[in-house]
Image 1: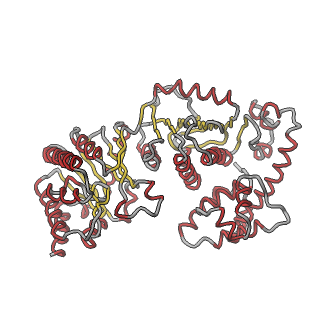
Image 2: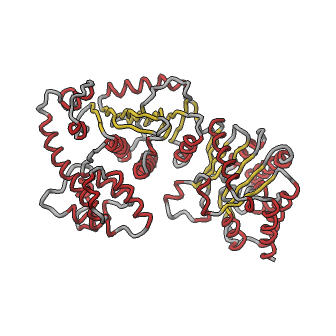
Image 3: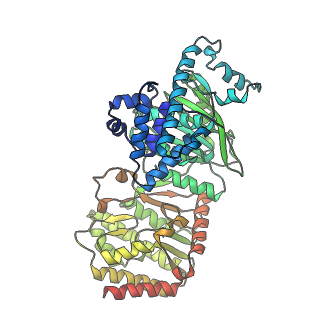
Length: 549
């Protein structure tokens, strides 16, 4: 469906795709940053007799200096380029200029329509005449009329038609929340009856949602997401990829419900207190996720009605994340030990040393480098010993398979300037002791030779796409430990590399665990035999040892 966005929305999407700030654009085209802010927020539109749009397009196109930026702006253009007239343009500068010109023309015309709208007999209902006819089920509108429909933000209730309008409205309501402090507000409630498909609709929109979610969470809002969990591996992997970006924040809560639970099918609902609510009318089938309309409510009575149905359904929801912890803390060591006691195979995908493969003396040596208290040290060592005993017993009865990135192990051996254990960096005052590396590798060789059920596979960074962008450990069908770099530490550059830690969270829902297990098994089978054959792995490790001696 063809749809046109306002100038400010177009500009916001373009800037966000390149992570360009208002100040950067303002300096580039020699205007005040406050003017750029007014453009983006649809408070001002460049006049027809100004050259602002030409300057914006030229500056942005000249700012694209690498492949990643070109890919991001191409995705933004694809999202915005609903006007087929743009097909005739070859240069990015010309395409951007045309998109912004169309947005300019639409915004100016829309401003006039909104002013005229106050005289319409439908103004008191919150709908324009065209929207009212559509909402009442009258199909006599021409296709051109339907194409030109749009939401009126001055309304208390609006019908939003067109997928780009729906995406823009969802982004807008979260953007507004990101500008407010939510410490004393009710939580933002999100019900996703189709999984996380809405927030992953396209890359540009997904990046915007991630950006606004983080800003909202850092502004002390609480986000509560309730989503439908299906027995579908692809959908469940998407869910984990999405929530792992925000799981670090204690004010981010995620619940799930099953298809047997009461829920309103075909809708995704976002309720932001004090701002409004959006009900997306969507559809998910074997072809994929689709939508083209939504309702936008600002009227408190309508919002209260949605809240009533939300809290009526909450009895059927269960928390998806069972526990969260920093991988440095003692609770992580305790949880890791407890999970190993569960029945079933253990699958590990990691970018770091698995503490279970470290000799006890070596583990204690590097544990002391993190300056633990006496109690912390004693408890961690006790949990480590319990884990080793369980590990020793389990290898006789269950499969233990680890997938590592070859380059990470090679760098550890060759450079010896960092140590990553269970996802967190051990702070080093000097390079790793060569004898410690030899002891560690010899221990892995010993384990591989002693236990038939213990195996290692190596993949290169080029083939990392066969596994998701997070590390994990599963045990049986009811324990999934996911580790990811602390998002807060990625945000701020003043956190030193050797102080960065992994944040971990635990999921016990069998449907999710099964999906990750299936993914691991598929990845293992896809790895060439030469990279997982036990004799080959042992020979590679022994050769690495010889290079050290």
